[in-house]
Image (cartoon, rainbow, N blue to C red; front, side, top):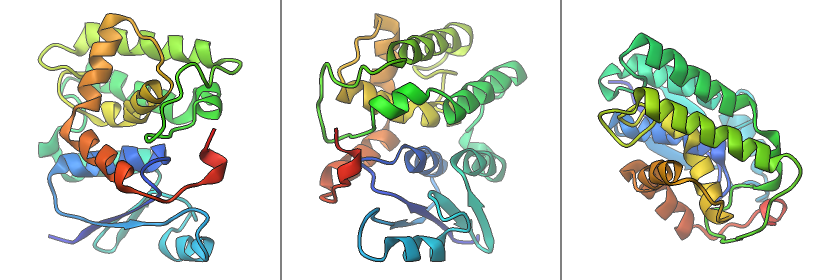
Length: 217
């Protein structure tokens, strides 16, 4: 089998990289991991040499190069169907993709004011304009997915899928900023936080020492 490798950013801060990495980890396939440290000397040149778009993440599978976290998730689901990265049911799968796309392109207030920072605890911070509305929409989406398709497991669609990988960085944000959640949403967030792949990412973030000043509140 062709070798798999992924280029990611600093685990403490990079939600986009986390999403793709979780899907890759979920496949159970061995892979090489390269971290580009944002702001380090020569990082832009190094990133351009590794990424066609000059951004992260980037997945390489033999001669194939896939960038963008959603595209990586789709590629992994097609290449390793045994990993079950999308729900089996067509209706559930359509909703899972819609939920993932909504996160991928939405919630700008949450992204702006509650920046991902796994190592920090900032209760009460980050509640800028529009954040409460973003949080409310995310919670309603989680609860709807769980109610309609969550039987058989603790995740949005029962088992862990790309949809959970997409929302895992949100779970880290909610912990960092101590966002209060209704019990059912908190139970889902706890399940994601304790997923083996997420724990592995978090432990990696806690071991890092690199700091990106612009990402520190």
